[in-house]
Image 1 (tube, rainbow, N blue to C red):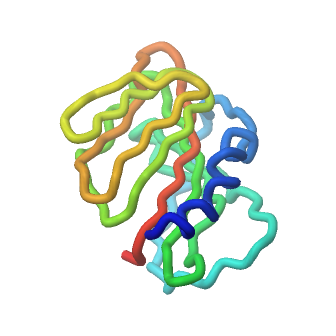
Image 2: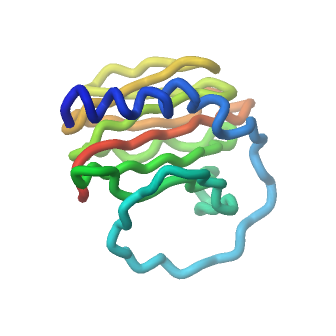
Image 3: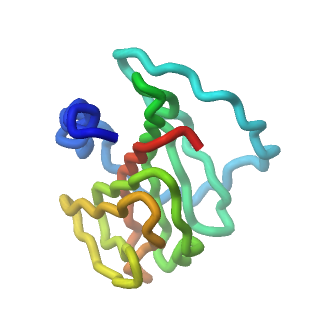
Length: 157
């Protein structure tokens, strides 16, 4: 991704906290669903992107709402989703990707490990994990939920 492509994302980055209203952790268990079949990513067009219904495995205390998943011009993959973690939810498995991942904390405290260093992010903070770096994210609190908006940008995977 070059500077021009990244600068095209700056309005989304700056508006990200206002894109998703604050949520509280849900105590309802979503119905079990079969794993979705991966579909080819479609080209994104300018417009409005309302969130999907909350979904996720209740056993991990993690629910998500998808906003965007598709390809920007020049086949740059863009995904935006909101995540809510219940108090005490476990850290996600350590992982790495070909894309860069950004977290915008909306409520609570988020433990973000990037390249072996764990940081605690608070509401209004942003964390970034550059493509290829190992990372993991989880709720830093055992008593309060946390929520954050995630923006992934990079090559199609």
